[in-house]
Image 1 (spheres, one colour):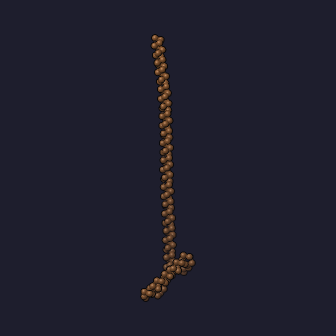
Image 2: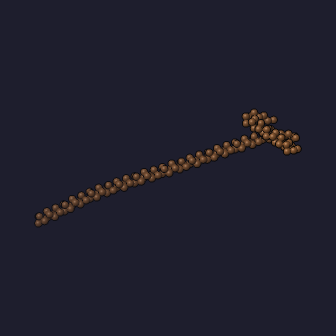
Image 3: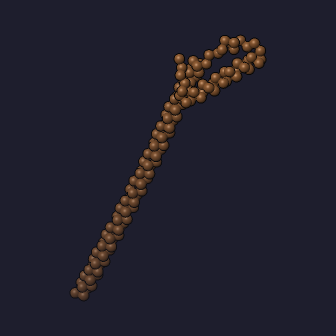
Length: 139
């Protein structure tokens, strides 16, 4: 009977040791799985942060591009307005500068008309030269 009890205790002890080893192994496997899951979660967080940063950078670049386009359009409008104002000032100065000679108010012939138009073209060229060099004096 003593032998049966010793064998039974030996089997129980072996089973207990096997059970403890198996529990230890499963705990280790669980620990490694948790580590892997944490590493994967950390990598996903890093990828998400990188993606969000890339989105922010694209949005910033788009915003800067829009602002540049708006500024360029505003500058072009300002220049166009200045050019239009200068054109109007020049046209007004020409209107004040050029006085049609009395004999050119009614053309007497084709030759007379050509002479009057040539007179006006010469006066315009003289006016443009004086206006562009800012030597024009208007009364």
